[in-house]
Image (tube, rainbow, N blue to C red; front, side):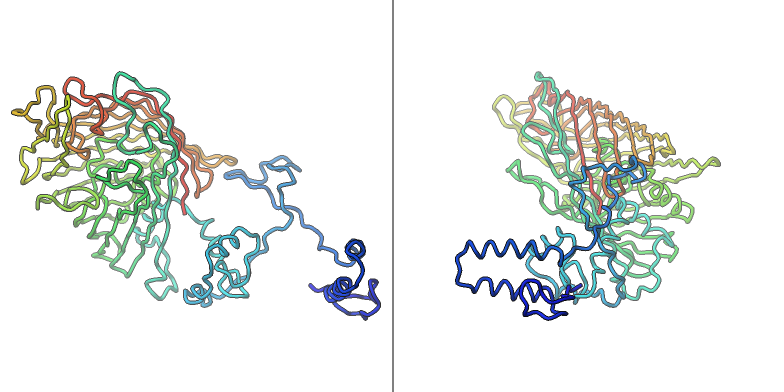
Length: 572
């Protein structure tokens, strides 16, 4: 709002009533700087100007500062008249509500035309009011794009919840959406970790964890996952899902610090044979339906890592074709457990059967031999409202292990695969039981079978090299958790897990024998649906399968120690 004189100007008499105060100031300063007197005189006149202008240019009365914010703490929970931070940190300029903008104004062409230097947009995003026409606005008279981002952030939740919503009939409302690109969904999550080895047995192997490269000496902060998900219904009979990960490490890279590479995790299409989404055929790279722990999204899992001996497929994924049958009642229950925050595994059908390459995520097939998988698993809701889930699954195929030389007493030996042309027999069967945390929950899984395993290295010689053959294995876990919703502190999930297993470690080079006995005690704190912090203490006794551990009694030595681990996750 422009300020004008209501009387003749007090600085000089040349401004008539109604003259803009800004114009008056310009004229006065110009005349002041044009005078021939010394700088001291002009500086004194400037101070007089500021003192005289103060009553003329009055700021609007300051509004009360907005209520303080802490994740999961409602403002009403704070004592009256008190704030979380000192008043000096409170700003008195609240955000103005963005005006509503017709949907036809929010088009990609207009947004692209507003792109400018990234540094300009970065500082604009860090400023209270974005400049009109910037990347945060749709046009020069609108802030609807920034408002849309704000509304999207407030609606963000665990990506697994939105995925199961898309896979449920009636789960998405696309009323009024005319084109396929109006039905797309973009979401994701990132996990930041820091681990500390509190103690380990110096007579054994050093700290090592195959699922977390930051466990070990000289490591601190680490990005465990950074994923974007693109998904949506391209029609009544086709759903697509693409998920890259930008925090992957590359197998075979000699540089130990080579991390944060981009890798395709999922890329598939679900062909719905019926519009009620009961029958679907999944074509592409996706999770293999074996093990509830494997199918549960890492964004939704309580323990920081999956159970080792249930993780039968590298990256939990394979490239192939899988048929899923999911009747209406199961679709509703799979969706309910995730909507209620009960840590479900998602919709992988009541019955599934399929075939896939079997060599792991983003790895070419090595033997022209497919793996076959079958799963029967169903959720039930008891009369008291408690939801349980039980299932059984199995797979079979021949796996070609990765081979690397082993150095023993200064001599290098290359293991021989018993069946090098066709691969090693790899087949397992597992049982699952889930009692969802309403409030107390229990999850248990166990599997047995045959898999590739490196022979004992005690009597290795040039005439008796180590071999890799199919040997028995078994392993599983029991997880106990508790769901506590609070008014002031968000959602708390304390948990305890015991896992154990013995047999060949399929995905490490040479598939060495491994024994694992581990206890994990942790707490997940969900501040808001967008942020969560997990603290976990691990008592570890596991074989160091890195290939760099000392060999004791013909096997790689055990890493025995205590780990203190933290993870901060953001969903977007």
